[in-house]
Amino acid sequence: MRSPGRLFVLSHRAPVEVSRNAGVRPRRAVGGLPGALNAAMQKHGGMWVAWAARSAEGVLAPADTGLEYPVRSVRLKERDATTFYAGFANQVLWPLCHMLPNRCRFQPAFWTAYQQANERFAAAVRTEADPGDLVWVNDFHLCLVPGLLRDAGAPVRVGLFWHLPFPPPSVFGVCPWRAELLAGMLGADLIGLQTEGDAQSFLDCVRHFLDLPVDAGPLRVRLPGRDVRVVVLPVGIEAGRLRQQADDPAVRAHASGLRVNLGADVILLGVDRLDYTKGIPDRLLGFERFLERHPEWRRRVSLVQIVVPSEFHVPEFREMKRTIEEIVGRIVGRFSFEGRSPLAYVYTAFDPDQLAAYYVAADVALITPLRDGMNLVAKEYVACHSR
Image 1 (cartoon, rainbow, N blue to C red):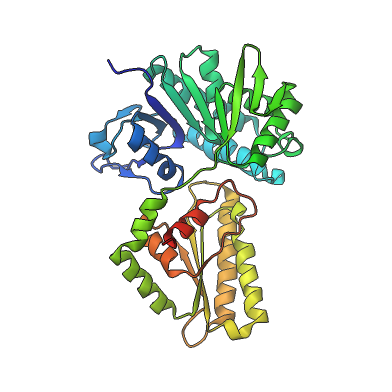
Image 2 (cartoon, rainbow, N blue to C red; image 1 turned 90 degrees about the horizontal axis):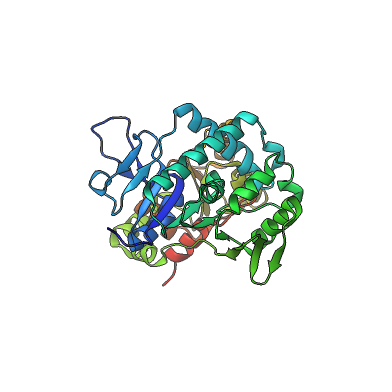
């Protein structure tokens, strides 16, 4: 028998990607939330509970994944997964939390699918966890899970970390299911948010929509018989690992080659997932205006804009990709000279070593989201330039 206190990490996205081909081994997911949490799992052990898209319901053993810990796969039918993920999570909560309520689509079918998916995750935890285990629920996809576990009497400790910005009552209040979402979150014993502003907005929403008392120091929500602690815990990075990558001779050689190929005195770098919150078109338009006003820089500066394809199947993102590529084409057409352009557009995902080379090569990183939770590109870039 193992001792109590095992760690369970819950997230929508699994730390492995499962192929449709039965003979192909799962491969590690790179970047994003899995990348941020993998170090904790490697250090503490436990089990990761996630939707591993094409895998069957059950446990993926370390021998099957190459990870140091097992992954409990939650099975969702493809249509249900799409409605829950691309629907409620990314067409309701995502724009709502990024202060873009005009982009929200409040469809009852989305909400039903969201509830059902959260119930499947909670059921998986109840199957695997023992009394005293610690359940760490991550992000907006699963905010009903803490309440479902508490309602079921699961004898576990629950923490919830909200990776997105949290909107004020004036914005969160437009959601028809605001009370249910907040009640689900308050099933946790501890709720973590990125910034003091996010924590204050969350407490304001709890007070406004649930009429519950909150305390300012230490931050907490007072419920009958228990308190829920609210803490500010900005997500960090493995800075030491990134510094090692940046110092790797192969990475530095790649970075030197990039500078030679770009042929510019000053290299600007943007690294963003395809997402309307990242402000990519605005950044490109700003660069275009800069070249208009300062034509002498056309031969001296190069902007490398890396856009990572989004896993969100949202129509607005496809439209934004077309907009970005129209702006890119116009800038390249207007300002190219002698076979060289001051703008390099790359639409792909890079592995960590490749991305580190771009960080090392760049003189300036442009981090210009319209609104963001905790943009880790800024921290990664600084780590690669720390000596």
